[in-house]
Length: 70
Image (tube, rainbow, N blue to C red; front, side, top):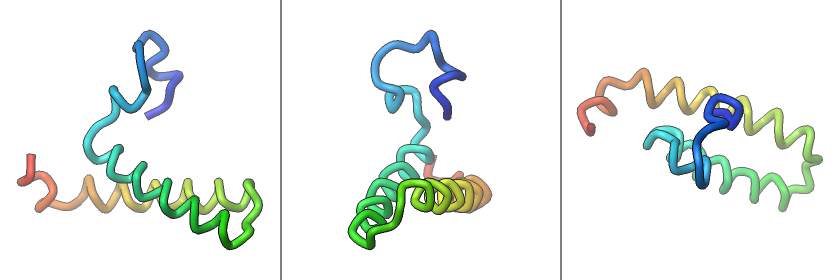
């Protein structure tokens, strides 16, 4: 979810996120902390985090078992 898509929404952008997006975001935050410890530059971290987010969201949204949890 991008802030531009919800520019009329009030409050924290996380309030508008889906459960799947929040799960991936939590994973990305942990991964980013590890990348920082490893000394990766911000541009490299951003590229890796973006790729990871796409992969994780596709995996979660494409999993039939995930749909049963809702």
